[in-house]
Length: 99
Image 1 (cartoon, rainbow, N blue to C red):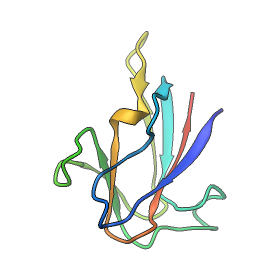
Image 2 (image 1 turned 60 degrees about the horizontal axis):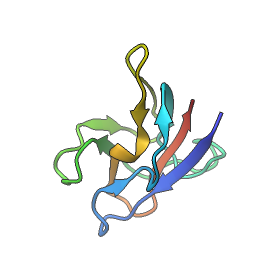
Image 3 (image 1 turned 90 degrees about the vertical axis):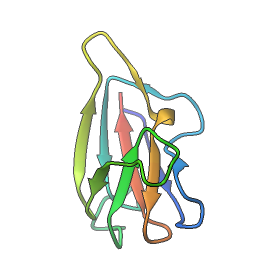
């Protein structure tokens, strides 16, 4: 399965998870700043994601090390480039594994 890591800075504001179209049926997101997992690179603080480029509109919150799975509706695909990440500590991020 393809995977990537996205980190951000506070000054940058909302950062797209991907600058290119990455369609998925299932995406697992882990709140850490290293592709080697939370024990190798845990986030220092909470991160948030959402479908808006406005900083106050990322309603899905991850504590350091949290893992969540997102599913597209049957027969549909979602696009990771439509999601934005906001951090409160520079360098925090998400590992994304998708198919």
